[in-house]
Amino acid sequence: MIGRLRAGELHLHLVPDDALDDPALLDRWRALLTEEEIAHVERFTFPEGRRQSLAARALVRTALSRYAPVEPAAWRFRTNRWGRPEIDVPPPGIPPLRFNLSHTRGLVVCLVALGGEVGVDVERADRGRDLLPVAERFFSPTEVAALRALPPAAQRGRFLEYWTLKEAYIKARGMGLALPLSKFSLLLAPPEKPRIAFSPGFGDDPARWRFEQLRPTEHHLVAVAAEAAIAGPVVTLHELPQ
Image (cartoon, rainbow, N blue to C red; front, side):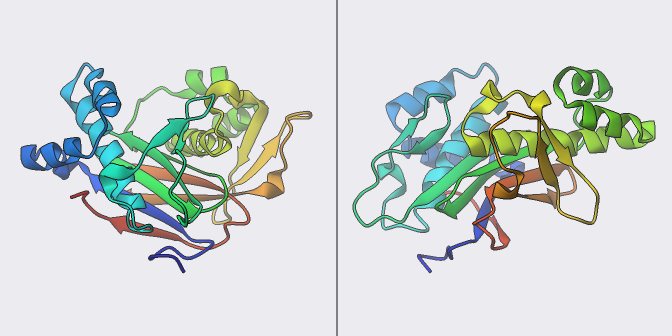
C-alpha cells in the first residue's frame, strides 16, 4: 500500500457543482496552477467552462498528492502526441501513478491508479434527447442495432452508457478520437460487467480491459476503463481540493 492507494485499486475523486461557486476556493485552486494552465483555463468562453477546467486541474494535483510526498502546486504535466495529460518526470521514489480526468455540468472526476492504463468519462444523465442519429454516425453496427431494439424511452439511457464507456476506453488507450468509435463495440448485458469487442485488424485484445459503471449522483453517469491487471475495486472519494 502506498499512501491510501493499494495496488490494483482504482480511486475515483469527485468534486460536485456546489463547490464551483465559492470565489475564495476558486482563488486557492488557481494558485496551484502554472501560468500555462491558467492561460488554458481562460480560453473557455463561458464562466462554467472556466470553473470546470480550473477544478479539474486543481483536483488532479490534490488527488495525486494523497499518494506521494509532493505539494499540489509542484506537480508538472505533459501531454502525449494525442493530447492526454500525464505526469512529467516524477521525482525519484514516486510511485507509478496514472490518472485520467473528465468533467461535465455539475461534476468533475479524477481517476487514479498505480500503474496500468486508465480512462474515465462522466456525462449528465439528462444530456440530449434524440441521440439515435449520433449513434448511427459514430457507433458500431452492433451498438446501433442494440439501440434500435430498445423501446424509444430506453434509448437515451443506453446511448449514454455506450458513449461514456467508449470515451473511457479511448482515453485509457491515450489516443482519443484517433481510434474510430465505429470499430469497437461495448457489449452490455446487465447485471454482467460491460465487455468490449473489436473489428478485425483493430489491434487490441478484449481480455486486456475491464469496465465499470457508476452513478455517483442521481444526475450523472460515470464509466471507467482500466487494464484488466488492475483488478481491485473502484473506491469513490468525495472531496474538495484545498
